[in-house]
Image (cartoon, rainbow, N blue to C red; front, side, top):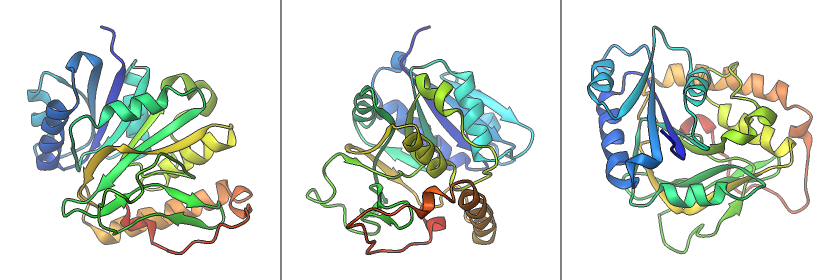
Length: 262
């Protein structure tokens, strides 16, 4: 079967959210023949596995334990064959036509990564791209109202939120897969920086709108902080030279703890 896009969802004990996410995909993503859904379950014990197995239109990969987000993403990427890959959290709800703008942007030869306009359920922006410099990144728009005139242009970014992230299969021989040293957090930023280092672009695409329940897939703040600081330390060592780079006229006006973003 020939299809264009792999939609890859990593799940860990989020059965109710996953059910909503999957139904939203079916409702708002267009012709089912154009995409294939993969759910990589990281050892759930909440009934998620039974849900996944009950849906014939979903392809499941079942890990015996939680292998982390990056490893699970890579399992899904390797299992699929679509030209484009969209990596998704389970705590997403989609709006009509969300996928088409992302695919259209990925068709550009120099674009390696794309991300949509992420909105909270109560109507605030929670993902419109990271700009600024590598040494002083600026997270745009966090917590601002989702108004039509705000952040409504396609923008080249340093990185985008990994909750919904599109990449190209044809670039995998050059860029490789996700770095599995990240268990949770920074894997998407790492991939974006890797794309930049190879001369490719990372784009925010406002025409694609997706609702994101922040931290819906994990509410254990202590565990999240542990993951965050461990990944941050590794990321800092890996990209230490790039993180020293400055560009003129790029001073951030907002500083956030990135552990709140996904």
